[in-house]
Amino acid sequence: MDAPWVRHYQPGVPAQIELPTESLVALYERSVAEAGDAVATEFFGATVTYRELGERIARAAAGLRALGVRAGDRVALVLPNCPQHVIAFYAVLRLGAVVVEHNPLYTERELRTIFADHAARVAICWDAAAGTLQAMPEDVRPAHIVSVNLLNAFPLVKRLALRLPLKKLRATRARLTQPAPGTMPWERLLAAAPVEPDHPRPGVHDLAVIQYTSGTTGTPKGAMLSHYNLFSNARQGEAWMHGAEYRKEIFYAILPMFHAFGMTLFLTYGVLKQARLVLFPAFDVDLVLDAARKSPPSVYCAVPPIYERTATRAKERGISLRSAKYCISGAMNLPDSVVELWESVSGGLLVEGYGMTEASPVCLGNPFAPSRRTGTIGIPFPSTYMKVVDPDDPSREVPQGERGELLIKGPQVFGGYWKNPEETERTLLPDGWLRTGDVVTVDADGFTTIVDRVKELIITGGFNVSPSEVEAALRGHPDIADVAVVGVPAASGGERVVAAVTLRPGAELDAAALREWSHARLAGYKVPREFVAVDELPTSMLGKVLRKQVRDKVLAQLG
Image 1 (spheres, rainbow, N blue to C red):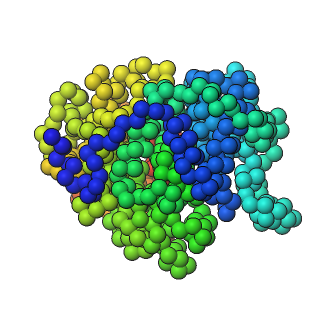
Image 2: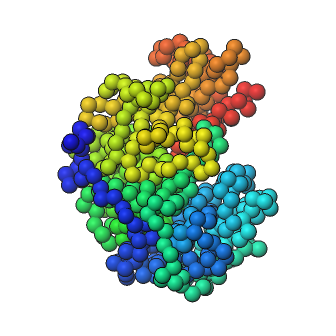
Image 3: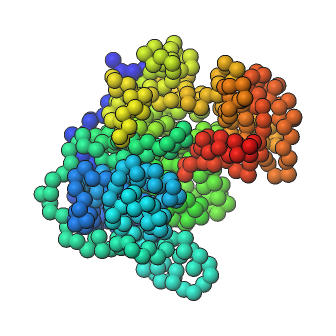
């Protein structure tokens, strides 16, 4: 019998997907064979066909093999969105090796921690990040660094224009590329003859990717995602976007592909659909809208601030976004105002979804249908199950409608953390259920609303305080532009509630007034004991507030 939420699926969406029996190598090879001369990637106007993509993957794989890469080896990718990223991702997988994605804007210290954990001996990196890798200690630094010059993927005319001796163009060039002495140029890697067609391919259950969590609650952990996990999530995405056509869709790759959401949307699902991937190394609203004149997007997945900026600027410039039919928002709460604004300029519904790195990453979503419910994260994807349990006793389910921790089960759920059995045991239950750490409520139809994070609850005076609840109360104050609430150690033990606030222009911090406002809306123990004004709240690449960094900033200011 189907779960109760299946009846709210968009018509045509199945309750179960066909589970994969082959690796992601078979996924891209099938797309190369079937799509041929269809465009695979578009980058500042330069295009690469699926046939060309397959040839470059084969050459890059051979080049990596010449550097000593073998099945099971980790290869680090430290790249923004660019054609080389797509090629490198599949070249590593073609050898049966393991991709490890990294944010190219990370500091040496951040990268050093991750490299010490996965011990990759080869890295393919943006040339502007090469110096950061080279600054790492010798026992951590990869033996081979392949540097990628983004300008080499530009159209010739734009490459030539950027060589002009103009101050603005020099600044643009410096943002896109920097000299990387002591590294191997990407083009030399591709100079190898293609890898032999009969070179062994990975199996469906082999490890494909180690994706590090953001580390918002501590040291980053490497989630081990198999070919089966990632292929399954791509097929789940295909089922959810019912009606999307092969070789017809245009995906705007704005979300970073080094993040789990971007990786699945573009590198696996997008390639599965044989779509045109329009790649942006960073979000620039005018670049996006310029591209939309030539290649109008049909799949536009982003976070709420990007939707808001894109829609507002499109109205100002008179550019149509009616082509955008499939739009999913994630990583943070999606306000009704953003939904209304986006849907006033686009050609489809904007729906909210939910995922986590450990689930490849998508687990739930709102249907692309009138049954969607704004304000919720939706219902489980096909072949995905959920239950809500007591956070202190995950063996006990809570009654429907009550708050509890969300647990997920499905083919996209990871196999554990790299070299970290203790965290694996805490997160992955013996029967395969994944503890999300998110506190939710679920209605009778399965539509799920996030209430808070288990690990972010503040314990003060023996009471649990939900940071999200306090933040929601404070956001209504006219002086507050944004707020993040954290717990800091109290002298008497436990924690005290502190709010870090960014103020609207012209406003000044008035702690007494904010406390009075809070008392009118919250129980006394939930009211922040202190208010700290900050210029901005630290966020992830997706715009999600990093509470651990907020807490560090608050502690530094409080002394």
